[in-house]
View (cartoon, rainbow, N blue to C red):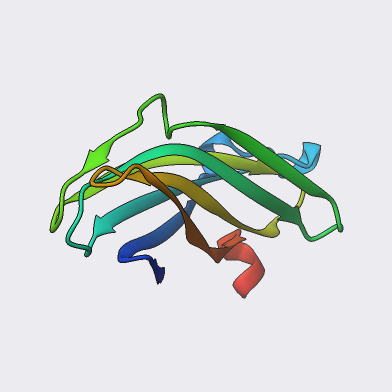
Length: 128
């Protein structure tokens, strides 16, 4: 698991290779990732947008932007957390992701950029 704290918001990531949804012969490798967003600050925050940068080991790069996460724009109170699971497909058995969340601090409506730490996506058979 990797984690990073920005502006009092801790983002932790765990990944899992999904062999049942992958087809290596057709260059399709599916990964799930679980994100925990923990508010360590004194102020409530709302997650508004996400921006992902996704790299395959063949050198290709994709960017994904959009509102919220899995259809939600959660408000996270001080000392609370929000978790969700999503997925990413790659054309190679190794890659990585990183990104940012745009959040709003509700006490003053200030927008803050919270970093999502870079995390590896590796099919387990590559580790042998």
